[in-house]
Length: 75
Image 1 (cartoon, rainbow, N blue to C red):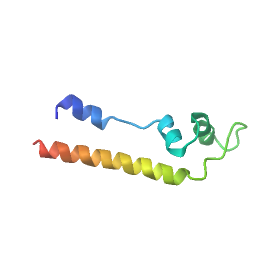
Image 2 (image 1 turned 180 degrees about the vertical axis):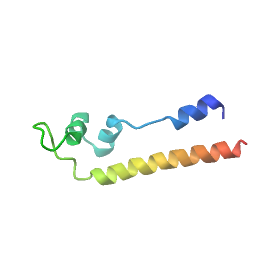
Image 3 (image 1 turned 45 degrees about the horizontal axis):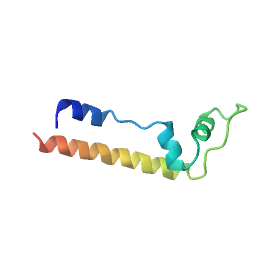
């Protein structure tokens, strides 16, 4: 693995679209659920939000663990 590939793999990030896809909702729903609760545009987050966030976090953790292992093997 070359430096550029390693840095690119390290800097991969999630965005609101990824969260919306994992929740099976629109991007707008995610944006509204992130607003302060007192605002008029606020919407309650989807009921399954914790499970979806856990899946995304575990996926990222797995990604970084694999990257780390790959870099260690190439030394």
